[in-house]
Image (cartoon, rainbow over all chains, first blue to last red; front, top):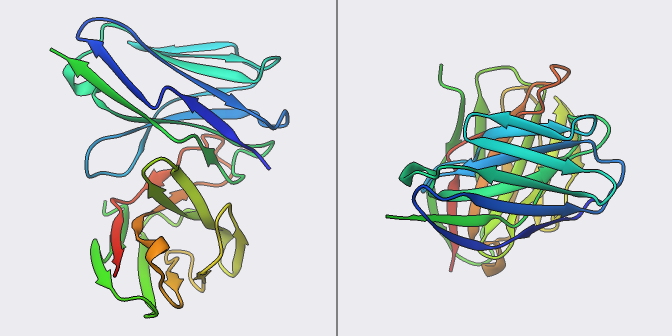
Length: 113
Length: 114
């Protein structure tokens, strides 16, 4: 089955700097890669996703890149703000986007004042 | 718009007891999922359901039972709770066929097994 590795487990960046979180996946059939943000005491929420036929996708300060050959994808947050402090999860799923979605172990992002 | 609700939000039980965590969604989403969240393990899929009366195992199904007699409800039962099942449990739903792939999560149920 699919296995998703996520690094780093904890990341601290100065406010205004960029943050990068990286994930790798094992199943070459996976073709959908979402990113979720979890704030304290809440359930995760989708913030951005990418499909296998796209190499990069941006939404304001957030971008995701995908390298299918290397089977890795990354989340980039620019101009970080205090409200970006949260746990971020990457995930992968197969040929049907309704397939079971497998998550990485999460990255706790701290934005330092 | 109530969305997806879980109950109870907090539960303390003892080893060997049966516990049921409830999940209810008001959207009529086809797919529903149960995940557990543990430090160092992230979110791990326990069971999922593609529609009423259809369920399938995820990554860590042992010790858990699910049912889906109605589209809107997806209860998770621990038949004989163990300490290793102490965790935060999240229910989620997804619209089939819309192509978004977006999971909508409940706020979680924190279970402590003594």
